[in-house]
Length: 436
Image 1 (cartoon, rainbow, N blue to C red):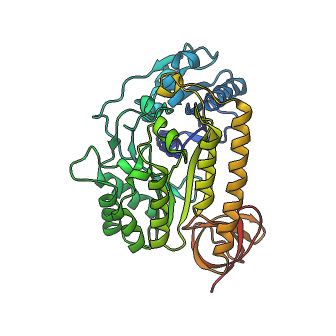
Image 2 (cartoon, helix red, strand yellow; image 1 turned 60 degrees about the vertical axis):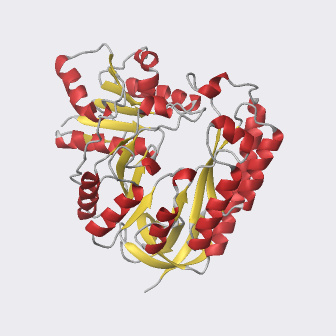
């Protein structure tokens, strides 16, 4: 049996797309092996959101070529779309496949293997609004305890720093009936949590008549019965409408976890980024959700070192995040992306200052996480058990994204259990007691 190995960089959408491609290979009779094992085919799902992502993608591709020079190595995804020529210059790569044809990776690789082609083939192209997302029906559980359904692709925001709209194309939504069918299939395989994800999840339905994210959620909840929960991936501030908040409040199957990117707490920098909201709007949004949905977890993305960011701009960001009940934050340094508006903006912030600001926010993030966990101690929550640590120790996630470690004499992986949070076991882990 031929073996195929995968390595995924970047966002949750890349991860779910890798799982979809794995399913295609499984249906064609391939064995999926760990990336560190010998394989006949290596698939590297690349990311190009920063220059660091580019560097990591190239390094992983070279590692695959070194592992088995006779293997077919395919670089797919966002860096393949943005920098195909650069990847084609890496010796040993046979296929560079952009996002338009990524879902057909298995078919393309089989064709290349059949003809014995060794010269790199570049397959990229413009993505059109008519390029619909196809439904993917899984035949078995993959490695993750939580299942992911990609409901949307593409972005129309064109934030000044971001390359994503150029490599992902326009907004395209999966047909509602296909989303429902995928959720039903995943639950039938034993999954208890489904994460709905997309490049711009909050714009689901923009290209469909009279559809939006809230209507899709209500359709799923109405047509898919059972003991499960749905988690939403990142949603932009301007797309968290009152209707969505009320839906999460009313439905226990929707997780109380909102990942709402901030990027900057400075109105001046937000305007330069093209973000179209103010720090005041963001503050009121988080406070409004927190007042309505008790125990909700708020996580966010924040950037440091955007061109022209002054000390007072960073202070605005720091102070806003310090005031708000965020439980975690993803901090990243601005990375110049050729072709974006911000690439021509000056002055650049020196690397030393970027590192300093990043370190300050990461320290704040740790403090905020501890405070959130302390406030949750003593609560009784439902936990989805994800894995066994050792012996009778297990770990899992609550709906509001708290990792909990607990003891059990039974193997409860993939099941819901009720736990009482007892004490904090480290920076971001809580210990719990199972409630009979």
